[in-house]
Amino acid sequence: MMPSSHLIVNNEMKLSCKFTSVFLIGLTFCLFACTNDEIGGNRAKPVKEISLENYASIADSTLHKNVKMYRALNFNGDTTEWNESDCNIKDTSFSCYHETCVGCYTVKICRDANNKRIKCPSYKDTIYDTTYKNINFGENVLVNYIPIAKIPKFNRDTVQKVLSTLNGHACAQFFEFTSNYYLEHIGLPEGFTFEKRDLFPFGFEATSRSGKCSVGAANVQYTPNNDNPKSVVRRLPEKVDRVTYQFFNGSMKSYRDTTITWKLVYKDQYGRGDTLDITTKFKVDESKADTTKSYFGRREYGCYDALDSKRCK
Image (cartoon, helix red, strand yellow):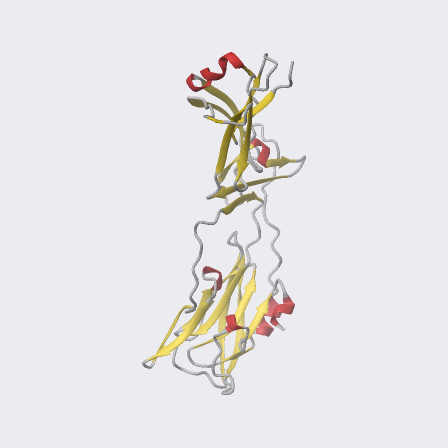
């Protein structure tokens, strides 16, 4: 008897055909365009082998699959769901990871012994019997643990120092701030704004026209390719957020030799944080009138990067 050949129907269902004749009847293979949900995801147990005489009956059959899922609470008290194979559970902690490819596709090709393409069979329907198990809440918990990202401490002394002297040009960016924290300001003059640079590939810029200043996305032409596959990742504990802000004087008023006391509010991705008192002396350097075009490699405003100190030197 010749060895059995295997028929892969898709990334969720795998069949194998056992042939009793002496000829190799079929060969099936899958060509994957890119990573799909099977990576890091749930892999169902192979179904029973189907003999050759029942090959055609697949189309009229229903596949029953047992699926085991985990449920876990995150730091904010939200319930998250995971495939059993997504999670690594230890005695006192656990972690979960799932990656989904958005825009990926699977090409399925079936051939017979003569290398002739044939129609690939598929089940008429699939019924999932799903059971859930709670990891860190409810009765019979597996681990008394809430996963949380390890976020570096906010360096208050350093931040006070780097914000002590800043450029006071009208309608201009005067600072760039990168850290693991979300920022707000209290007490800066009207027109001063903190813009979250991560929202746009080339950040923001300040422009003046007809005696008015406006702060908006940098006027750089680019065309994103939305057809490219994208990887979407969920994980516990969550990845530490990296946030970059651009500080702007969005008014037409220059601040020359002006000292202002204000408050910087900082919070991490879980909402934990504090308020820091800042005293800033604003000055104007007329030799550096254009302070907004950082994306061309010229940076003439203050900079602080808590994650990469060399970047701001």
